[in-house]
Image 1 (cartoon, helix red, strand yellow):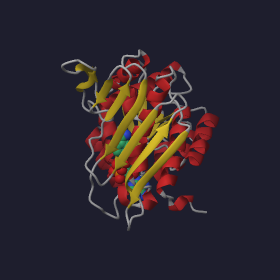
Image 2 (cartoon, protein in one colour; image 1 turned 120 degrees about the horizontal axis):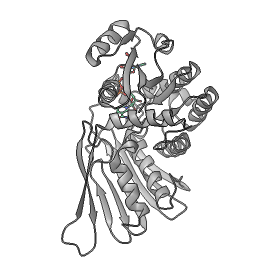
Image 3 (cartoon, protein in one colour; image 1 turned 180 degrees about the vertical axis):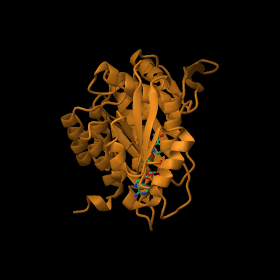
Image 4 (cartoon, protein in one colour; image 1 turned 90 degrees about the vertical axis):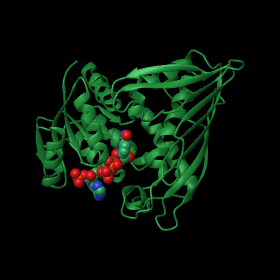
Length: 342
Ligand SMILES: NC(=O)c1ccc[n+]([C@@H]2O[C@H](COP(=O)([O-])OP(=O)(O)OC[C@H]3O[C@@H](n4cnc5c(N)ncnc54)[C@H](OP(=O)(O)O)[C@@H]3O)[C@@H](O)[C@H]2O)c1
């Protein structure tokens, strides 16, 4: 496989995790990092053995040694830096959600297409063989016809008005941060049931609890109905302890995916469980995989080397469909970001 020279834009928590993934990947090289402060870039470069450290995002984008940029800022900054990277001729892997809303996502996708660069929203779980196995089981009718999907992603964080998750100006709240995963999973499964890469729901209902001071969703639930009859219940939170799992119910059995999102972060084996009526115990299906974020970096590099317009695990059409659902879910919850108020 061909090497790919990455530039890391932003030096927060996930930037470090992804950089470790690049170091563990088959194709990735850490060419450069860009931070708003030179000292932070220097520290990050030392920690992750990055070749060059830039004291601004502009300098990172001007680095001729960088082929692909990984955008790891808070959500409201994704659109600007993804477009600027694309305009600088860099391929872009942008953290989820691609943007704050669907309208922004359309603009960003158009900018990437116009620049002729590859763009992927960083749903790393889509690159994991466990996800591929779940899709395969649905496509092969191992569960019979899947009618109901339940999926959640949530965790408990103390309220902190300055933290990204609780700050409306930084795109805080659960739906955009983690609710995007169960929504993308439900759309993946609804598509797989019909032999398609994804499907978009015909209706979306939702509700949630907004923090009285922060004005962002602390927890939320949604219901998606698809044209093929499939129904999905999705839930997320930033203030509750959740099981963060997925369950698929079919006419012949049901599948439990205990760790659907962050499976084998450092490489290893994960299991999913197929329950059939009358069986004394579920069938355990074990999947061994390399580190999760290395898989993502290699999937991106493989699509680039193949000259594809999209990374097949997460195409931009898929992203746009996901953003549209998140808009509807947020609207049902009553969460409008300041940047969206005109
Ligand atoms: N795929 C995943 O597994 C995963 C996991 C966690 C988060 N994420 C996504 O990754 C993105 C970043 O999340 P994170 O948890 O890494 O955030 P974080 O720890 O707060 O880091 C964000 C970084 O963005 C840069 N930044 C630029 N403008 C900023 C601003 N106005 N305020 C604060 N930071 C700013 C900063 O880097 P510099 O100071 O170096 O400029 C900062 O370190 C989010 O969109 C999130 O949804 C994805």
